[in-house]
Length: 274
Image 1 (cartoon, rainbow, N blue to C red):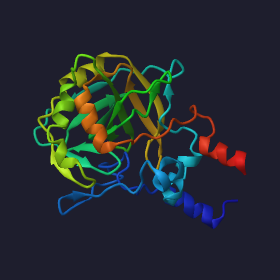
Image 2 (image 1 turned 90 degrees about the vertical axis):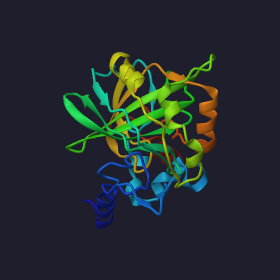
Image 3 (image 1 turned 120 degrees about the horizontal axis):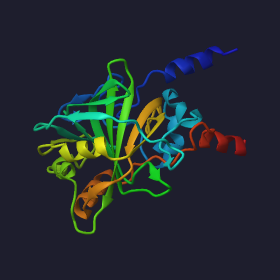
Image 4 (image 1 turned 90 degrees about the horizontal axis):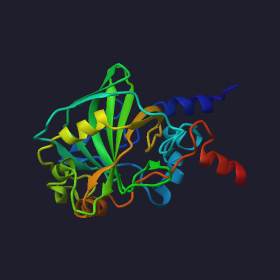
């Protein structure tokens, strides 16, 4: 029989209130802006606020150390190919880049991804360095997550890797996102992006091979049931843009989780040392 405490904990865990998680900007976690500053994250990637201790930061975060379908994971031949998707992103002239403390996030963008016959609407996209997912164990220097929400509350995250180029070429979208990057150097700060053109990205997402699996948010509260559709081939990234992003975000990648359906690694560690 569940105790009153357990019932209260389960109820609390369904309330998604982790500041500036991957759900930021959706119906479950509204953006909070005051005095020209955006609210910063209540979690981090170092010391007592880092991923090993996320579950202890809030009772809402229990899935971070008990969930059995957590993200990120290693992507390999065991992960199925994604079904065909249709994407439509609108060119944007007035998007904003926000420093949430835990990531750099672009808001004020419009787009739709039709996944498994249902429209999902782009709420924001943000970055992780190094990449959170790995392909056959190999990481990339940068990963972008495009967070979509459907009318009935379903979530699809489009994942895109970026790899450093030897000839200095880079993806036009990244150049536009970072056009005024210095204005978002400090946590809470907001700046404008350049004009965003998604043509190259849309073409890749619709025509190149992708992985699909159902996992979780890679930030607190680590909510499960999140569909990831991830491009297998990385897009171009030059060293200058990478260094500029890394200087601000530093390290903001959750450690690799156990294979899907297996016990949570933190749960296993706790049992081992009990």
